Image (cartoon, rainbow, N blue to C red):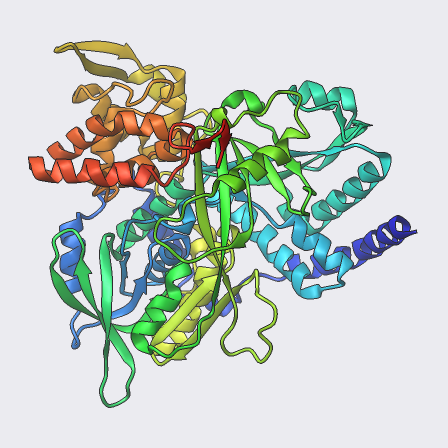
Length: 629
């Protein structure tokens, strides 16, 4: 009886979704009056960002630009926080013709934005809740996410792609239920559909996913339903956004912390911030008409700088992920376990040549470096074990990390019982606009809402409306999936070996890696590898080249060893032990680029090792009586 009711609800909701999706998709996200000066301004901005000879301003130049923002000549917007949303706000605002600054206490994407599931998704789970709870708010959330999903992939084609995800079914009810549900997901996506979902028989499924179990819970596999979502290299996308904002004219500065806010004594309005450069220890004031707080899980800490008695709006949630060898999943096909023993959803996805699995969802304190607990790692291993025909071993875990989701409540809402999965924009202190909540997929829309709120708060006069739906980030314009062939054909990996310079082939793996990580700017990295004898790989089994360290130091504000191993490359996330082995060479190249002395190099090594200890591979896992504790 219960299953029949569920299916009837699903069918009824499909009709509602059809009508709603049609209404939603034919409405543009901006009016004609928001287009500002029209195509000419879009073309001018696009030309600046897509210029392959563009130079990202130096960190010193960016700091000078922030210092030059005085009370008499303030910025229009100062963004606090360099995650996906903060970098998105800076990119949106500067391409509207506003004068923009951004400061980040650690590094771009150092927090939540680098620790995601790497999916750009519309929210299948939210759709299910919308259907069974008859919740139109959840349905609108899915509509918005699906619209933004396609947009993110188009804006950064080198860093994002469509990924098929397989849902195993062990009885015929599950086949019908998931097929109908995912067809409705296709229907809601409408014109933003990536690919049509479809059913595969048990035999076809095993051919597509060889490690998939034919039996589960004493039931035989009846088949699978495969649907499509997007996948990304999250930290590199975040860094790309920050660099795009810089190329467009924003003054972005990482490793720079807001220590206090500047206020107008007469109006008690926030008019800027006191900033400390955490690399030099130098402090300076930056003035702005509006400050946008985009500090993710730490947004309450920023709000308390304005009012120490402010009511908290963040409810932090921990999401743990693990990385396994590539043989756990085939290249180009993910697996979703829709219902684990405690009702949670677990993904197992191919990512950068390895397999990523997760995630958990549990309460957590807010810390700079959250660590995964052993029971959370084991929960993920147990969840995927039932669906695979290979032995799932704890010793295979190459890396495990924890991220903090900034689930938000609206401080102005009368009913705060439910925590929103959507984003919240508020101005609970004059001149300080806070944007938080939401998810990676909707960062662009979140940024647009935050900039709109800032324009209203500061009575700003932008030259045009929001352009980011039409702009690709640096490296994206003109990129093609076959671009790697140019690098493979035209460049050589010159490298030092035993004191001699020897040539190495720019093999397909290295060429593809550079093309996907840097887009159309990959040739710059390849040129460094060839001309400066930095063509050697940093870690065995990974296509990451020494040249990337030099390039990122010069062009991507890579200021520490951690910046490189965690966010410019993804080595810490892919293989903690490999990252540890690569550290000495990474530090040696950065020392040459930034003129570090011996004491600074020792400091960098110590800090990087402490950072890697917060990632749990098999090496630093704890054992007791043969078991992990």
